[in-house]
Structures are given as structure tokens and as C-alpha cells.
Image (cartoon, rainbow, N blue to C red; front, side, top):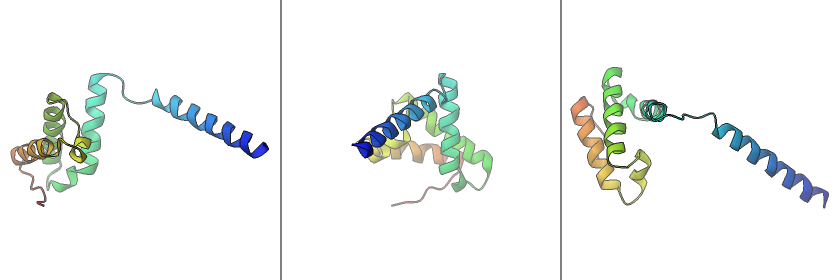
Length: 101
């Protein structure tokens, strides 16, 4: 019974921490966009030989995906081909070579 109470209390504390941190993230559309571009640059920007090309790639990618109601994580679902097409288009415009296959 004591172990069960500690487990429930621990889950409650963890849930409280997650909810508290949820309010710390980006709130405005501009902040959400900037955070998405930053995440893209950390994950995909290193494919560019020039940091400005990485920024151009990610800005294009985030903006075009958002215009279509998509996110980069949609690459894992049914919208994969659409996301890939947008990524290739943005990479071409930024002069960045994406891996094939």
C-alpha cells in the first residue's frame, strides 16, 4: 500500500512538472515559427555548407509546411510524399543537397 501511494504521488508530481513546463514554451505564432526554424536548423541545417543556406532552407520549409497545414513530423505519416516534395523544393532554392533514398 505504501509503495502504491508513493507511485501515485510520484506520478502526480511528474504530471505537475510537465504541466508547469508546458506554459514555458512559445505562445505567439511568431514564437512558434521561430522555435520551429531553430529546431530545423539544429536538425537539418548542418546539411548546408553555409549557415545562411541552412537558415534559408529551414525558413522556407517551416513556412511552406505551415501554409499546407503540415509539420516536419508529418514525414512519418501519410503526408510523407508531400513533405518530401516541399523539403526538396526548399533545399533546391537554398542550394542545399539532401540525401536521396
